[in-house]
Amino acid sequence: MKADVTISNIYWNAGLKNFFFRDQAFSTLEELVKRSTMGGQVTLNALDEVTNDMDIDDVEETFYSESVESCAEEFGIELEEEEDDEDEE
Image 1 (spheres, rainbow, N blue to C red):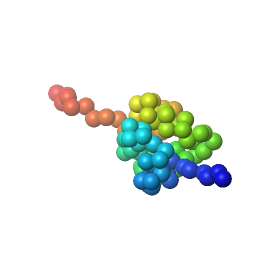
Image 2: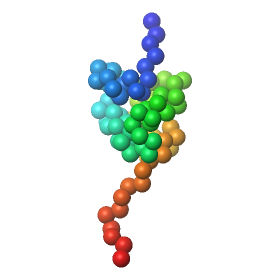
Image 3: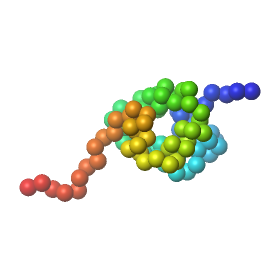
Image 4: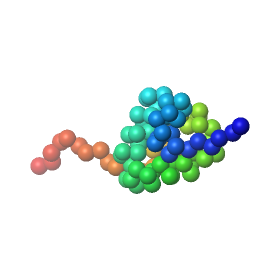
């Protein structure tokens, strides 16, 4: 039997999350969604499209081993700029 599992499915379902993603990988995914300029569900939909033909284990490994910025670049997600703590005078 074969089942299609999307990033959205994993993001919204704790059982799938715990089965397919390690904690560090899921934390990276959460941060990517949080920092995306597109908004949460739009970002998840874009990730679903980009990763549709990829093996979920390879996708999880990318989120596990790469930074949020690297994942964003690889999957074509634009991130909000991080705010600087320095005040310009």
